Image (tube, rainbow, N blue to C red):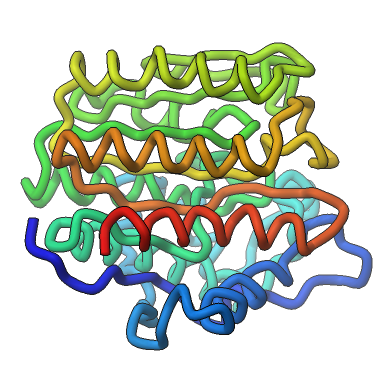
Length: 304
């Protein structure tokens, strides 16, 4: 693949204002680009601003009734509680831009080997509903788009968030050209798990060593078996031992080693990858930002 500048999707709308003391760390979307620019890992030219995703593209994955509810602010109170965010036109616009950011990242990855989205990884969104801070399933939408446009013929989704990618699994369960792999905390939310093509449920207290050895055994075999021509990587940092919602005991360094391993495997096999960030809920926002920034540092180090 030709060496071109790695592109990163970002719009200030990603940092959506939430009620005071909300448990979702929305501020990270503002701090991650700031940190990457401040330290010199990225330049302003690395970043691009996506447009809003077209309705027609979303409807390959989500149903029209649900999308109309999002577009016209018609979610019920219970539907909003399940998602975890109060509905607003700005929130819907944010989701449409994030989704297009992931689709655009696919196009950039096909020329540079990798591209990233500062947000995305909204893997708890189903065809007819959202949940767990996820409204539209950006990776499923983007994967279906690549398949429908014949830009890819076999896709591997690598979901390493601490929470199972239940929405992704359900949305893509009947699509043999997209293989879903989720390695997550066995007892973490969602308490009812869907069936991915491969699920690895990790026990509470899983250490860095066990985490990495499990991944190192599984992923190369998957790549060999699936033979993907494109990959998505959901690089959640809620695997950290400091995470409020995760139940694993993975260190910051091991989380970075995970990123290095995944991206090295894909690079070695010449599989372009679109990376989204997923979750991270450590009490100190600096911990979340540092772990997410490690994903970008790894990408720049390996692919530049």
